[in-house]
Amino acid sequence: MHFQTAKRISGVKASEIREILKVTERADVISFAGGLPAPELFPIDEIKAVNQLILDEAGQKALQYSTTEGFPALRQWIAGRMNQRLGTDFDADNILITHGSQQALDLSGKVFLDEGDIVLCESPTYLAAISAFRLYGCRFIEIPTDDGGMIMAELEKQLAAHPEVKLIYVIPDFQNPTGRTWNLERRRQLAEISAKYETAVIEDNPYGELRFEGEFLPAVKSFDRLGNILCTGTFSKIFCPGYRIGWIAGDKEIIKKYVLVKQGVDLQCNTMAQMAIAKYLQMYNIDDHIDKIRETYKKRRDLAVATMRQTFPANVTFTKPQGGLFLWVELPEGVNARDVLTKSLKQNVAFVPGGSFFPNGGKENTFRLNFSNMPEERIVEGLTRLGSVLKEYIS
Ligand SMILES: Cc1ncc(COP(=O)(O)O)c(C=O)c1O
Image (tube, rainbow, N blue to C red; front, top):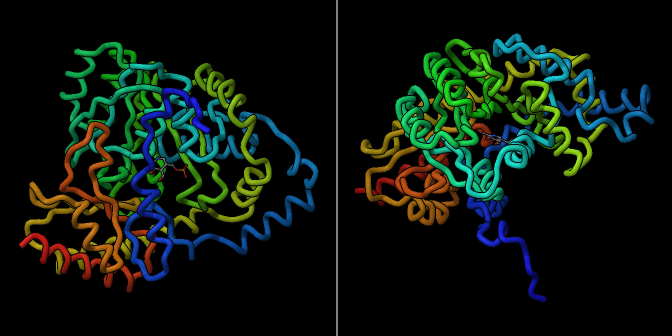
């Protein structure tokens, strides 16, 4: 049977990460590829307890359909947390619960993008955001970045040249893939520039809570005068990704549009999962849990960076992120990270080549390393093996 599929699906390729992740399921592979949290930190006993409790206390309600907007107590908690942490001014009606923040990105495509629209994003940016937006037929203009975040003069240049731009997509905290964090001034400037051009901004923030050192910075949203900035968030990295619970937060009028769109997608998120998380937040101190995650990841980052300093060739550079799950490696010009990956997979070590994080291609001499998922001894062993591959390959 030859299916006549929609035009939008014809150019869609398998995500490189998903393909690499298939290899990494083998137990002998040391994987720095996925964005997986440390599974040993999932609070399994607590999750058992809260599930039992909600079934005992509100079983019928927990198993019934519920509202598209999401479980009120959870939306209330999220609004309070964002106000306290990020300097926003939300209440529960500003929040829509989504199937992970990934669904919030897809819904953003549905709400904002028509065929041929332009999305401005950091160069490089999150691969699955590129995939989500691309399905709506948009094209991307990449804005160069440095250690302080997106370069604002370049952003303004593009907005002046293309005032019809629909969306600016950014990840200011411990960015995926680079691990970099925007400084305060850039956050303020993005809010100002996007207001000047009346352009919507999606501020994607799955990692902000996982800071190892330095001051927490206010969200770009906290400088929003116009109501053009939307924020996404998630329980995936501070609790567990398996529940698939995230959110989008923004002005009530635009959130109502997201609600309408979500109704056509899946009606609502899993009632039981939302109630379980809300119960967990009521019964336990999530800050203690997040502290444990931060401590573990900081140790892993330190170990990764120390091992790379010892074993990688001197002309290979890398970021040392202040939080999050990833760091970013640059090889000398002309070296292709995909070729390095082929060699390193022979040593049972996996990572993600950087090229696919650039929506318009290029920069094949880069790759992303995840440091949250592997236990300490495997980090040292895997990066030492990778160091040998690089030395052999580069010199
Ligand atoms: C920048 C960014 N946004 C969104 C997501 C989606 O996460 P989730 O759907 O689990 O909330 C991820 C996952 O790794 C990510 O790195």
